Length: 210
Image (tube, rainbow, N blue to C red; front, side):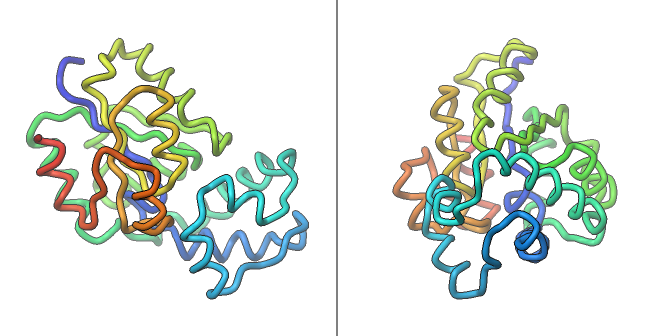
């Protein structure tokens, strides 16, 4: 690959899965031993880093991979009913028209991502999809795709909506754009100093071009 490669997170960045994930996570609270989250607590969590959220939840680190897989399974039953983030589809179409290479790195299940993309007519836009259940291991997945596709890291940009996305991109030595329409608030994202913080999807076109 010689063109610039734009790698997207999925949940909260492309797909509007926020409420579905919250509802599923709350429904599994008694099974995994944590308290369900109300609206007031959700607003607080938006201003915390991913690691702070896990610590606050008091979920055993051992249980997290199992919880993630259960959430993925439950989400898979309704993924085709969910919608893309408003405005993101036209941005993806324009990026593809400009000959950028598009990919996805996510902690969601690949089958969920594929089902969503196919339902919304977006599957042909992406050259690769990588997934993993380790929510703090995206940098390893990014490193794998860089090696596999023989990419120059200066040509790769990661786009995500959480502090862990910024941390993963930094660990992998690639550029990162944080988006303010997903899970984490714009305030906490700014504290992690992404290369750019996009408030609206259309901003991605200008910043990627530059």
